[in-house]
Image 1: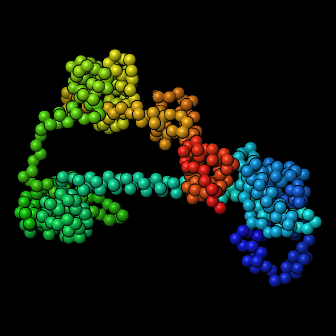
Image 2: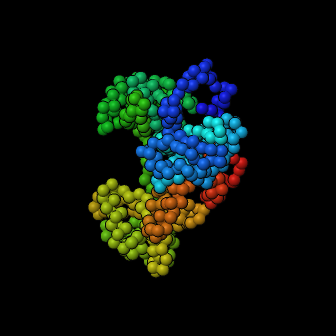
Image 3: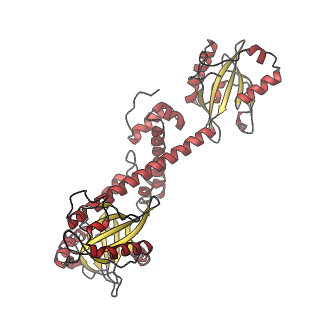
Length: 472
């Protein structure tokens, strides 16, 4: 059988085809046709199906094809391909394998065909079922997408870790557990050790400390590998002669053990400054409110006062927070239960009402509670109205993830959320097809079972790019 890649000139034929095939009787030829493809059709020059050999267990809806035209068995998008194949066959030209789709009640069935001339205006069409290939391609695409998501997540985590590591005011060292060689040191550690930038990696950890501290440091590092509660050690740095506290924690990565060391000078003591803390809370852009055990407001910053349209903080003092925050008797109880279970509540979707009850604002709430009695609750409240407008509008501005869809619960009717989810799935499938075909829109339309015009319409609808020339 001829393919696009291997034409008749490139194939190696039988040395004596007459001897091989000349003695074939009708039954042997039929078996050969069935083995060569999952579907075998005898077709005339006009495309009428004269006879067929089909495994009806695999293709039960293809039983009545004999007597119909081949073009009527495929989707509208596939008919031009069959017309090209028939035109080439009438001219006696070889034609490459072409994939078409047969519509069934369970969806389109992809089949790849090639035509072989039989003489007297008849042709034999060999068809190979591509459903297993399509399923394999789909699984491969899903795995590829999962790997890309994991890769992006890891890149983001690495970027956040690197930023925290570089900007930390504490001296942080990562040390190989077996050799005690320094793998990484942040700028604070280099300054504390009196070393040049990027000069510590590769050096022995013991070289940073006075000889009188090295034995106890080695013991401390060994204890940290076997326990999460190793007591921090006081040691002396060799260059600056400063007393420091070394806290070590063991961890594993790529089947190797490492130690995370935090080194703090003994003479450094954090200074508590409640005045500055209060000033920061008061001027922070997110709303903050402090409540007692009965959920009555004790303190609120300017952002919260503005959010609930109050005249001043004094107007809110002593007022029940449940009158302003969340659905009465529901949201605050859920947040309190989450704090009771996990110690904190993060990114809880709710609403804030104005003090007069005339308006509501969608918000995200994070909260924490003190552990000692009497208990106090702190809430950080972030308005998300603009984000929801960007996410929840219909038409072209669709949700970008399942998380954003679930955030719409309570904001939109279920039927609208279902419509949004349908559009989201359609857009993701189109993006996946474009990614898989390297932005070849013709191939993407074929994979999705769409016409090119339909695909272009959806591309414009979802803002996935301008219509371009089809790659071939």
